[in-house]
Length: 252
Image (cartoon, rainbow, N blue to C red):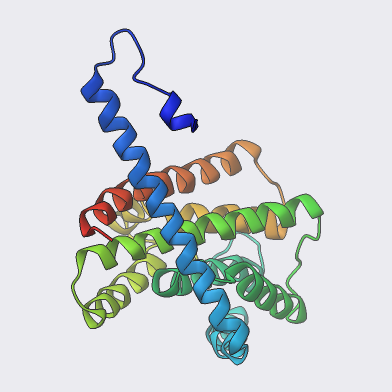
């Protein structure tokens, strides 16, 4: 007998209706997560058949680091608390790559493409990266968690809109505000007060903050790092719940 067949409604104060609703929610979430990973597997399969797409996807982060980063390093226009601007920027560009790819195509190979390409370019440009194995694992965890967060957000958009064109349009509208209303390419301290408030509610800000601490390995604050993980995880969990409910309504 299956576990869910053996498990009946709990005795006590929990009513049968409440128990049934809870089981229904769990079933919807399970289906949502299953479909999410099915989409990710499909994307991985596409890349295996056409690996050149990895190169084309790497162009954008390369341009940010090689052009934008090098220019602003020379003019020293942005205060970064003593960090070279490329060091400050590299974690933000990694987070940006995760955001841009995840919100349009899901989790697929983000850790392989974005993490590898950005690390190689940053090292070649002289960014003082931390190669501590635990720090690298922490970076990978942040990349995957951020990918899960924004790809789930993407799937929620897909559940709400009717056409592919509208989905792409909304995705393009949302990605740039999420990126620029974060600390990816400049510290929140130099933002106007209203933008600082938005940045504090932006999960990308916490992802970048965590990546910056782990990638550069300087003065890691365990409490702050735990908060960064907790915020991104909480947002992801909330999006999964919302996505599970919306996906169930589609009857897929």
